[in-house]
Image 1 (tube, protein in one colour):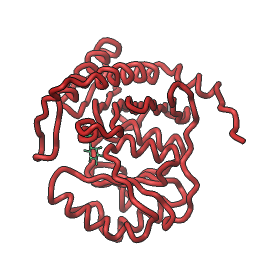
Image 2 (cartoon, helix red, strand yellow):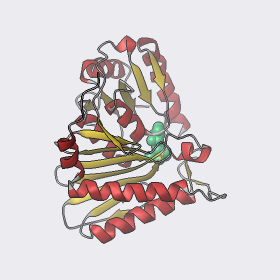
Image 3 (cartoon, protein in one colour):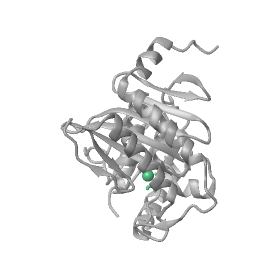
Image 4 (cartoon, helix red, strand yellow):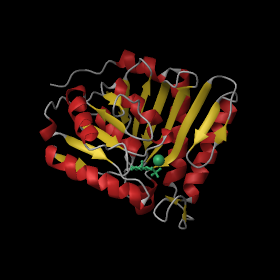
Length: 279
Ligand code: IPD
Ligand code: CA
């Protein structure tokens, strides 16, 4: 028997003004992105496999314009170049399409990710990860829990209770440079025999939400940027996940490890033993 959702907690969450704004903007960006032009205007960034489409740029412009209208004093950092300083002490960290390669190839796992950070503490305050093709809206606000609105139905998120790393289904991702990929393959060779299996779904933000939902038991990746994890990491922690880097470091570009509390330590230990935070 499934328990009744705590709708009062859900109402409190979606009435938080920053989160409500981020949800409305993510939904608008998702609508824009679903209306794909025939020519996506693909160009490349850091390497030949690091693609960007006209739609990444259009969605970022839309999000930046909306935030500029509703939160003119806040800073903005975006994957496609948005970099605005603010005066309020808050910064929106946005990825207009996390999973651009999936978007290009019509694999459904891509999303709009919008996070709000407090600049002087670096704490995440609110996060939205919207997967338009599936109509899954993952949401959280600091201290108010994490939910997914799945086809209009709200459901509270909770990490898995898998306590045995050898039974864990793990997410990870790979960077765009061949040197980075070679070192990620070296680490994976050590991790894979010690877990149940690995998924490379193609979006850091979606992976983090799947950890929050107990679909994946954990996720790790070297080389992700603030816009990839700003929203999803908060959602995962509010659903009960532990989150860290390696060797006592905080999460960052070197490494992010997010997993249910029963396996987080074991996963960190394997990654540390293989120096997974360096190439
Ligand atoms: C990428 C995705 C991918 C991860 C890469 C990211 P992008 O972001 O999150 O899953 O493995 O490290 O760069 O390029 O699709 O926005
Ligand atoms: Ca990204």
